[in-house]
Image 1 (cartoon, rainbow, N blue to C red):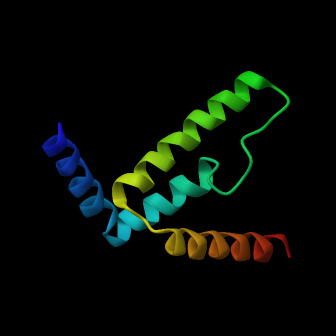
Image 2 (image 1 turned 90 degrees about the vertical axis):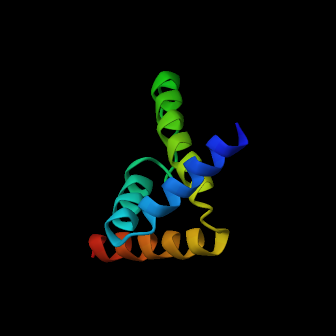
Length: 86
């Protein structure tokens, strides 16, 4: 099992280390609740949204994206959303 997990992590890192891979990852993070709340008034919808978010968290774990990089991406996303609203 350890070898299988090591290979999976290596594959994820390879895919998401490319420029297109980074763009896809950023899009996935933006559109699957990494930066926003998953809560709604409907508990089923909230659970569904949490499921979507958990996939992104698993990918981030596989690619070993560090907290500093995630924080930088979060700030960039926040800055872009402010620019979009003006």
